[in-house]
Length: 76
Image (spheres, rainbow, N blue to C red):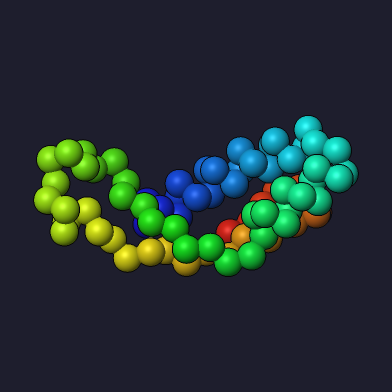
């Protein structure tokens, strides 16, 4: 699933960013990111050459949590 792989990549980068933040900033970032999210992923298709109905994909539901032992956001 391309959308899930892209999500993992984004949250890995956000985990690296988190390491540079103060405790207060980490708390705010965690509040924004943790929880359940619906994402729409289109992969690498050229949206200009695809009919409008073909662009629609079902949303991917992901749950994000921060793992203190691994120091990384996890997608469940």
